[in-house]
Length: 346
Image (cartoon, rainbow, N blue to C red; front, side):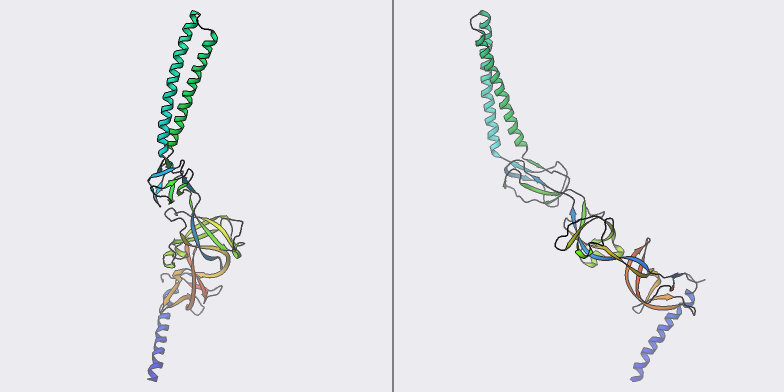
């Protein structure tokens, strides 16, 4: 039993060296790359919250009872689109009263016209004086002005009736509808909130990073979802740009806004993973295809005077580099090492 325990690890070691040496001759003709420290941004993972540049309320212009609601949370609306209807039953009664008033005044106007015409005829015969005719003319003018004023009052009431239609003040997405059918509201009350501006990400960073972030810095935006499995990693993230850093620090947090394309289908206040640069560090990195994995251990082939040698390494993060990607090597390589890249042997 003792011999068996010693012999098996030894056999595995022999096989491991056999695998390591199998590709030495074939890789000798492959390209080489001299590694050197490169400066990469020190990224901090935070959550950014989707915000809208502007959120405008759709308000009632008159008081009354809500008879129609044409939108719900999440609806897309266009500017000027009718989204609800408010009806004030008193307006119909006021219109009827205005019409009755106009009829009364028109009757008085007709009577004043008749009196004026009669006095003009009597004046030509010398029966009445000029002052009497002037008095009739004044009564006629007053009646005409009263009719005009009554018609203007009726137009005001009719305009108020048309203002019962609540329209969207801007194009966007409805966030909330805080009223229901049959609700009684007053003029100026909010019927819906509409996110009408461009979407952006708002970051809240610890105060210690306030001195490291700058306007125009590039950040990496993960995919939708709070879990790492859905949010992805930095290799699959898309770029964004810091466009504004607020000068006031509140509760030990500094606020920054990030612009990024493709947020139109996100929910307002939805959170997503963001990697933001808060400094720089020097790392040794190699192309991912220079790394091979055997038995769960990562190796990089290093060119030595006595021949290529597979060196075990510990890898770190993967980051973009000049249109490609590089993987950080934490241990196993040092500045000036020549690594052998995969290639076809001659």
